[in-house]
Image (cartoon, rainbow, N blue to C red):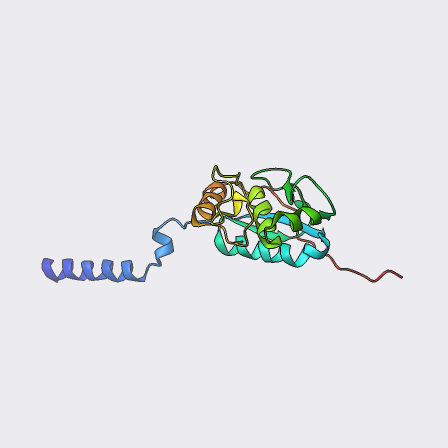
Length: 181
């Protein structure tokens, strides 16, 4: 075999080998960490469905953190009266409390869904902005019905949770309601 034919055959074999090698074998796989925050809405009373709706809104808007029904994370309680429509015990946390107050939600002029989305926003790392009352931002409070976080709010949550190492979390636990005997 001539030298030219040998080099052509070698080049052809190398080309076939390169085409047959899966891309994952040549490039480092990119792993996306998703932090899970469990929430227990068993004491949310009439706001349970609203809590689930708020969770869907946040889960649809961010990918670095997911809210999942379960125990050992955020406990949600509804009561009659309090200092505000809702309160969250922490900002950017995986364990804590959210309280919702019926009378204050009603008198606030805000939709119940907006109030619930707002309090989950605190859990997910957001504080109140300087432009309180801006209905385009769920974290701005106000007499508003908009329950959709702004693009900037979603991006801030995404940035906060991206790359955070997920600590071991308890397994999700579904709550079942049984009739009292």
